[in-house]
Image (cartoon, rainbow, N blue to C red):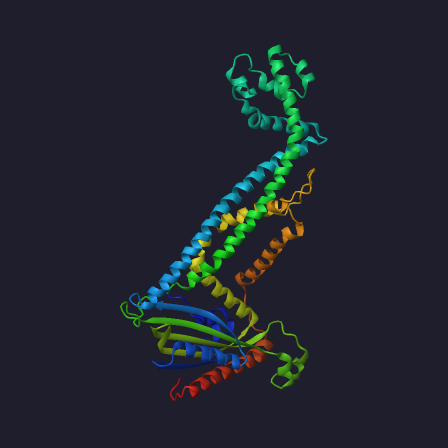
Length: 464
């Protein structure tokens, strides 16, 4: 199924042109030459549009080349090079991504542990007891277990006579509590030093855990910045590789596999904004419109389509060019909708294959990353504050830390403006009868003017 042309998209998204079914004007030139290059023809039209005062953008740039031609092999080598460079960057990004995932999981564990220490300061005795029991379990599983068979769990489960050791440890708060419990002396002699070790650990581990938590957060920020850096480096190569991908030729008869030929499809749009105040002063619009501030701006738009059947020769292309000049009157909403549809079309091709498989997981991970990056810093006392290596672990001004985040937010806003769908409303009576009609007339006149200048400049008598 072939993709839609820009003209078809306009006539589909615009309520006005959907009903009208055609542009304001259409003029077509067939230019067949073996002496003048396609590049010269293209830049002549581009410069001509600029001379007419139009703000010009390129909307479509597609090519298809035959497999047996030189162009196909040359472009293929360039595309392969771009893909190799992008693969390297993405591989490095994958390594950093795994590091970021591990850091996020570690920080979540630290946060749960720190919550137990906060609950120790609670006035609710039941909450304090629950926090003590949780920390005792962590101490037995993470610290005491390193003693092997002489650990509390090792002795309780592997040696006779110590079955009560775990329960006694969980109940006791200090050595006095141990003496109150009905236990044999051998169990008490083992339990007392373990209680002492635990109480000492609980005092020291909180500050150490907070230090590790802050260092892991700082490292997470640096890894996220590295990830963004690799993504930024890979993006130009991915875009270049995508642009170097040939469009499927299908059953196009002008392309024969063993011929040295190519087909180009280029579309330019030139826009001229309607100045309501100046037009009213000139008498083109009612005088009452001089101080009017329209809700939507209207533009006279010229769509120039190039369809080229060419032969590559030593870096240039010669052949037959079909150039179509079309005039449209479009408002802000219609132009935004057009940008959205074109962007959606581009993303729907190559980049979606890369992004689609990871979008959901990345969005989920982004919320976790933001949770730690934007979290207020916990103050931890550090004796030596003159460490010259602080910059290496990211200990710098907090404003600088958040600067990259704000820049990314601004960039995401720009991306959202393109990716956000727009609902195009029907014209009001004033827009339809005045702004649209006047812009349409200018578009028709400009389209003919461009066509006429081109025809005369190239000495052409026949045209459509």
